[in-house]
Image (cartoon, rainbow, N blue to C red; front, side):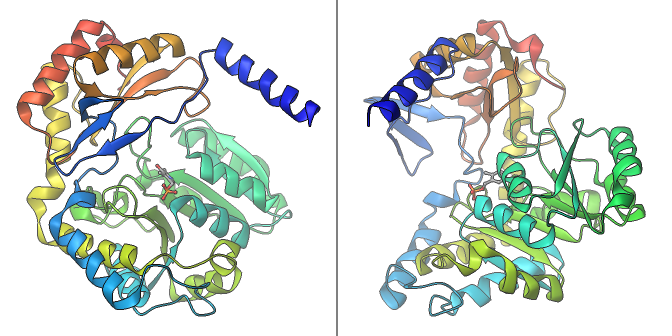
Length: 388
Ligand SMILES: *Cc1c(COP(=O)(O)O)cnc(C)c1O
């Protein structure tokens, strides 16, 4: 079809002109946390496998064992025949970790958000969402057809203004935010958000993709400083610190029962492969049993920030804001020449004018490599522009 080919060619040209063209580069990740890309050996500082559990011998062993016992694929939707026994074990573990009555595992974090949000909100309802929340939260909000109002990042006064103006006109309301913001590594102010959402009878959901396994004794962003924030809907992913694949929601027994009946991204899709579920359980065993492991990624980020005289980080995600996407690509290329894999993150993943290097630290990073990276980043001359 000529019109189709012309349409995509024109769109791709525009992306190239703006420095926003993306390429998927084959990257082989290795057990030691390094990566091979285009023939080059690199130390990866842009991976979400924060605890390196995707490569852990015990996690791999438990996955293999599950393959031998249950096979490779789930064979069907969880509501038909795809609900092998490991699901119940994982869901019980997640609910216990998050301090909720029950949990439901989804195919991925993205699938969780596009299932949960439209199950709870319809065109009659209203959604309030932090402007920096993950793309799949916005996708879920759009699918729900609810009126959606975006509040300025972590700005509680702005959220309250919007709640005051729009909440009353709708039967149900949701407040949606990341617990840990994926591109900036900062935290949602749950101590303010929880009472604010509650006072407007709005249901708060936090996306804790980057919190579970790391913060609050591994229990996530709702458990910082030993206090449990009363978040009724805690969702997250098994694909980051857990090192596997899949999403989850932890909530009351009734909410989870409702999701089994109404979340379309659970009902009309095949269950996760048994090996993945077994691996996630093995990863949780390791996380719960090793406080030292959980703390290591943040310690590496702290070392990096000390080296560069940057404010102390609160998570192991440290953004170095460059601004212009073409300059961000050039900076990433320069670091690659020195053996560091750090992808440039550009709009629309991050707001216009904030293209960046998103540096993430993992448990296995060696201190000398962190120090060497800090020197390389200092030499780029952007370090003064790091977000607080
Ligand atoms: C990665 C991420 C997701 C998506 O999770 P997947 O399991 O990779 O689909 C959702 N929310 C946030 C905040 C994320 O960082």
